[in-house]
Image 1 (cartoon, rainbow, N blue to C red):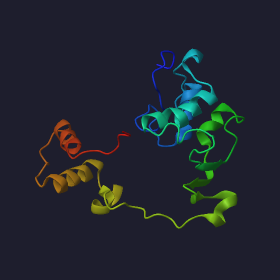
Image 2: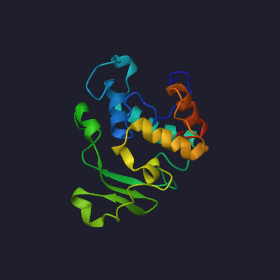
Image 3: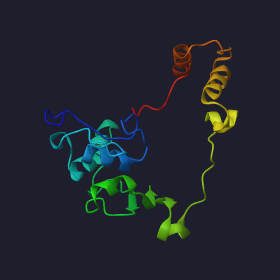
Length: 182
């Protein structure tokens, strides 16, 4: 896609590495390896660190219709900042997946602080959002299927106890899912 000039953005949702951690996804793009280290892609199908980071920043800003206002370090662009636990461009490839933020500033406000910046940390957010199933069904102490069935019953107003896994999945997806980026 890149060779043909098709817009490409990188993200964490629905990747083969199944993590919301952007550094795990960057590791995947750079090394072609799973989190466990299994090599899946040859060198010609992998990216440089610069290319992978560019897809996360400038590439993704195109998809959110924000190209030109974010995604690069240029005058006039939004300037959210993260101070990382290591230098992404210099650390060993295997260490990319272990990177983290010590300080994250979004819209001029500190939204995360740890390590050397701990004293600047904002108060913690509530553990369960009001829309999350855990707010209504008590988290993971019950079986996953039971929690999903209870959520579906709550949302649809009818029993789903006789549903097959496929029908149950259709019921849940019928509730709507905001996990898509666009």
